[in-house]
Image (tube, rainbow, N blue to C red; front, side):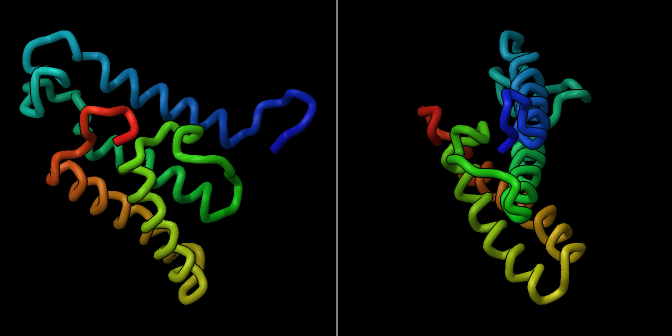
Length: 132
């Protein structure tokens, strides 16, 4: 972590990603058919929540794999469910990196983050509490 008050580069990027996710998720929360109105939004620009989940999980998985991050899921801006996906992705990526190198681990991170988030949302996604 940087000293002297300088922001940690990973934290700055993570906050930027989180801000984008929150802005996208909240943009239509007050409209009928928007994010709060259901998953069948007619807006072509709305990013599906599973895609946002996959982007955030993949980002933090890379940071964790490279050892550039510390802290818990809350400091990463993840829910508990997203963090569980991240842990599984990172475990698999570490093994893949040892076997086949960094590029293979990067591809695995993208695949597993997408699959994990898609499955999580198929199963109901986040619960009522912010920790879900």
